[in-house]
Image (cartoon, rainbow, N blue to C red):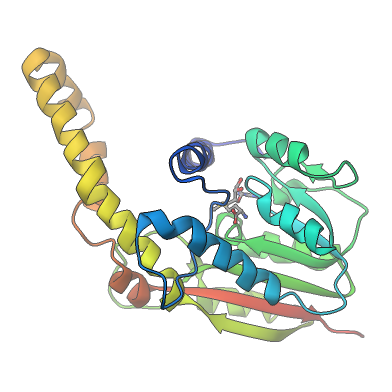
Length: 281
Ligand SMILES: C[S@@+](CC[C@H](N)C(=O)[O-])C[C@H]1O[C@@H](n2cnc3c(N)ncnc32)[C@H](O)[C@@H]1O
């Protein structure tokens, strides 16, 4: 699969988020946090919330599972924890940076497939295929077809990710496949639903945190840089504003209108842990 402009900038965005998260907050993961009631919603607690998320995820892996394929493994820390817990884990990563980090982290017997999941070629079969916040980036029809072929006889599919719900209003938040459409696609496969847990409430605080960061840090910093540019290089500033007018307006609308809130996340999204088991025929 050739990297088009959209996938390339998305991937670079995720890689930049990883560098910043690790440097400033010692984060080891790229997913949302699982915010328990007793945890104050604060950026400083994101690391704890992400660890809660991993514990929650692992606690939902069914008994009898041995081998796992971690699709979109990010920095490889979930795979590492799974291996430390006793599972045999292989990973898929289209990002060269993450693939190398994951290789450095995992024992040699763990294979890291450096490709898009849609392109994965292997004879291996797995007891469980895991998508931890990576399902939203993959065409659901292609993901399901590939996964079904990769599952062992009684294999499981585990997805923990954000989905879009059906609403009349247009969502101010992007991302996630349509949930109804996803259920329709899965219903075409001989798979039984084992768990369907709604964790929208526990993940929504992430959006409030993100909103606060944009309002209190990114916005004011951008304004200061803009003002400086206006006074030092007025002509250049004018040209840039004119040339990127539409892009600037799009970013302003997406991040700075205060619409990216936990409340809106709960209204337009559904964050779910979905566990399916292959039917034995
Ligand atoms: C939000 S990050 C989640 C990373 C990790 N699972 C975690 O929870 O920290 C999304 C991941 O999906 C991966 N990804 C995006 N598109 C993919 C594709 N088509 N096939 C496989 N992985 C993909 C990215 O490289 C990234 O590692």
